[in-house]
Amino acid sequence: MARAYIELWPAIFLFALAYLVSGLYPGVGITAVEELRRTCIAASMVFTILSVWIFLSRVGFVYSRAIFFIAWVLALLFVPLARAAVRHLFGDKSWWGSLCCRDGCRQDRS
Image (cartoon, rainbow, N blue to C red; front, side, top):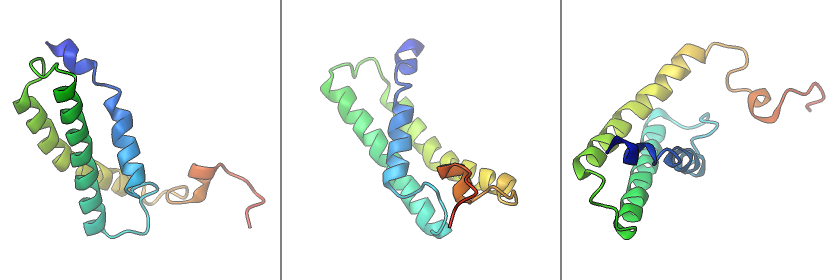
């Protein structure tokens, strides 16, 4: 039974893509309220896509609806908390929020 859930690991890329499309990366320039709204919408969309995929692939009897609901609620709670924790831990670092981390460090930046 647990193996069926482990097989869903590629969904991690769906979350990253949803957060990217929602404008959460690089995550600067938006208010905390807007970030929370975008995070919740993106996570909800991914869980909706997964639910529809499971329904259409006719393997729904393998996955528990309660587990999916709990995972969705936990994602809505812990993803914003994790983002805030990472921002708190690394926000004072010199490289945090700079283009260097995203585009590569180049000295000839104008």
